[in-house]
Image (cartoon, rainbow, N blue to C red; front, side):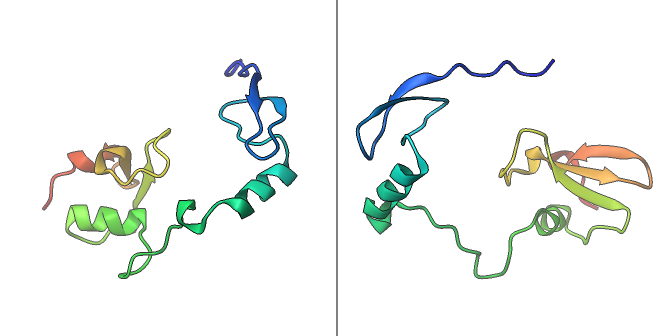
Length: 111
């Protein structure tokens, strides 16, 4: 069955000022207007994400720091469904393939 589609609502294009129908929080009416708007924005308003100085942040490294030990070969980590981009240990699941258990990372006891 799934989720019902969101009905389109009327928006005003931030680049050309034309009214258009769109879904969610659309800012522009077309790719051309989106590119034009992006070129006209000052560089300070754009958000850029860079890797931390100590290296790439991964769920595996986060899990190992919370657990205080390296992950074992039968353990895996994933984010809780719907928590994309979250680095909160409460939103990260630890799968133990040896004991067939799933635990939130925030609930795991340190050895």
